[in-house]
Length: 477
Image (cartoon, rainbow, N blue to C red):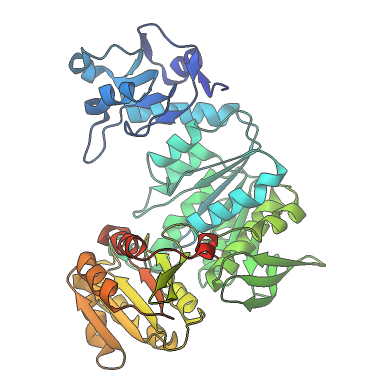
């Protein structure tokens, strides 16, 4: 296997001190002692709950060939005999290695932020660019102060494209990360009510997301959602920070990557996109109007980095929704089947509404019901009661037959729904899982949606454990 980094290059990039007999180099980088691979470097980062130094011996046992550790922790590592690079601060060293990775790379770099759609757009871009060259993209939602430098440091020197997701829940979080990434193209998927507990209004969220512009060079491309209410402000701000190349996507007649036609189907969407005077027919292999908007951004980014647009469009047809982000399972029950839609990874008002639309458009069998299984949206702050109550209208429009709720914030929605829709409330995810395991039937369509911290992934797991999958459910279409 080829080396990701030589030990000497790592030492120079991080200003570290070698201790022990250094390997020639490493094949990968991990910050998790449980999953570190053979021949990889383990960075002993100190997090909010755990200190990686406490797991250094586990990392070595699992195959790590090199440890990156803090000078101050060295006395406590006396029994660990693996080669080490000793630094003052492990996270800062990872950041330095990330910067070195960016400096050596000749890849076209795309950075994505937005209130919703970051991870879905990143995964679509990963797929769309793969036919044009080697793609490096962040794993899962590695979009924070450790995830971004880790993703950068893991980027092979041979990559033709790099796709980076950059998130935030406070102002001034995106700025240092995007300057590290140094993108050629920056995408803002949309501005919506997320992390509202930390912001006064959408204007403040827009300003925080706009920090991504500061990482672009003057010749960089900015790609904005022209259908979003904050487009005008973002476009104006781009001019103020000196950006000349601002492009847009959306249904708006002036969008550079314009949606001309859209057919939303139960298992996919077909769209026509206009780019200048050309039209392109595109099939998106997963359902949902929100994915159509993401696809427009992806097509725009592919076009702006000069990748093969035809191959990218073909690749979008083969995509499927990710675990926790719309993945579908058809499961056997009572001689028939039901559909389980897994949206358990994240939730805010905009993504809730998008999920409701997907549920609305999902066919049910004879006697089947559309069932929304909903948990709290976190980080809503003083807006929490209102935004949870405001889900009642979209639920009615989605033709939900049964709403299953858990979590203290969802009591507001329970009150708002009243007797309009049959509603079940339990204190937590486990209570709802027990209820659902005894009350589902043939023909149902069940959508599970909550913020990650509410633990609704346990509901999905409980249903997958109880009900066997039909052979076609692995398509997750």
